[in-house]
Length: 160
Image (cartoon, rainbow, N blue to C red; front, top):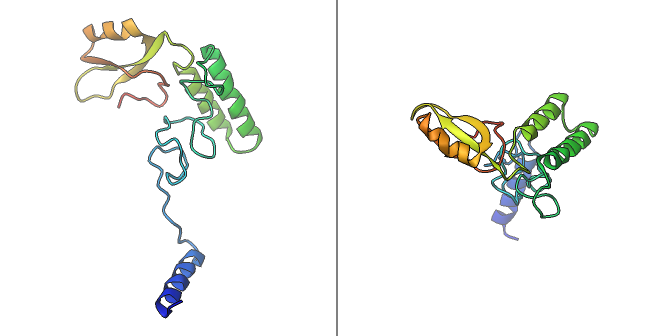
């Protein structure tokens, strides 16, 4: 090992041991999992994720890979996971309530509805409503614009 190699290794080790000096975590989808190990890089905002960044209760499919039997089945999955995290001390009471609100305000498990973003004008953030597919299309007559955002939750608002 050359003198330069030893110096570089010693410098790198010294940086790791200095308090307050940490590698910067990159988390583009905001799920709390570093992108270096995140296997699901586009997790929807607010979803509870596993150790590799994938939604525990994915909106589009149940854990067995099939469609959700109902909206209630999706909400029960979120309720079960939130309860387990709350019992383990990994979720606050407020976080627990937010997860349930997020699940109830979702289209997950109901193929007959969509998230519809209604825009009053070109510069305003939209208002999210869960409505039938045809109702979203019909809303374009009453507002500046209406767009279908597909499956998911209106919490947080996807119409920004």
